[in-house]
Amino acid sequence: MMDRLRIDRLRIRPYDLPLRRAWRSARGGFERRHGWLVSAETDGAVGFGDCAPIPAAGTEDPESAESALLDARDFAPGRSTGEFLEMLDRGFAATPAARCALECALLDLVSQAECVPLRRMLAGDATDVVPVNGILGALATLTATDLEQAAAAGFRVVKLKIGVDEPSSEIARLMALALVVPADIRLRLDANGAWGFAEACRILDRLAGLPIESLEEPLRIPDPSLLHALQERAGFPLARDESLAGLAPDADLAELGVSRIVIKPAVIGGLRSALDLSRRAAIAGIEVVITGVVESAAGLWPAAQLAAATGSRLPHGLATADWLAEDLGVSPCLNGGRLLLSDRPGSGFKLYPDADLNPIPESRKEQSDYE
Image (tube, rainbow, N blue to C red; front, side):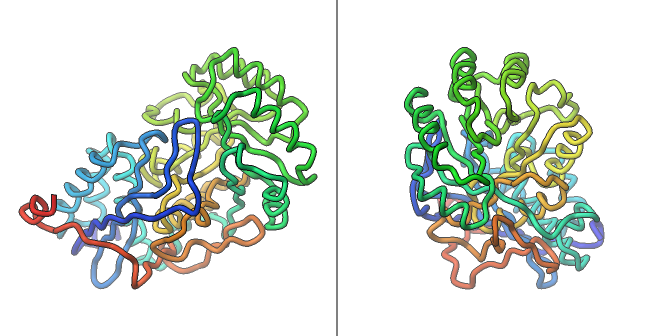
């Protein structure tokens, strides 16, 4: 199928989506999501991908992403999907968000042609249900009511951004919230590389006894030996996320210094690379969580299909649709803290007919006029 299916056209369309509230972390924040909807077309069928780079999360910058997308658009017409994927593998390592979007569009198209859900093309034993964590934003904005609402919605793990304010004030706030956290809720903390080693040690000691599910990226400089020392000190998993950017394909995952990795397909460079990394992690005894980059539904659907293919039963970081005030299509169905995936062929994404998209001109001359 990869060699028989040929691409008629590849379209690149920018989007600009407002958030319901600002996204804050130790690495900065944003109030809107900018990106490009990628669509691969053949014989009336369309496959979609989403390129939404965030350099602070480990992707390329937007300018590099757009340039890579336009190069791919010029290469695509008449190429087989297999030839196109080989081209991505050879030349797009420096632009992982663009590579991920292009690959998602191709794999969506191929799985439609094969009449299977994308997750089952990735792994025959993929599940139909993906557990997810609630995403409540920065600790400073969190209230007891937020926790109660998350519990009522069926979430058993909620994720909080820390490392934004002074450690002493954040620890005090966590200790106060711990008194009102519903009994079946655990807190997944993400420091986004906010601390030095000594500071991280002090914070871990203060977190002892609190309902912490895990802590992501505690160190500003993710030295594996220091992370290992912290993991030995902590009573819960530590995880690496954005510091996986640029990880060598043959890296020894047992030497990362942590017991969990958080895989963003847009950082790793696509679904196939992410799935391979998750399988290698499982062999090394390392837990896996799949998460996104607060992208549109066009990116959320393939990420959910990937999570279903990994076999990881941990809650994944894919309940981000409610952060967007507008979207390009309907997001995966969220019920009881789980994404429910249908048996529809492809990724599951369908574009709204009235989505606000302005195509980038499709010739280099028109492109120069556009710029």
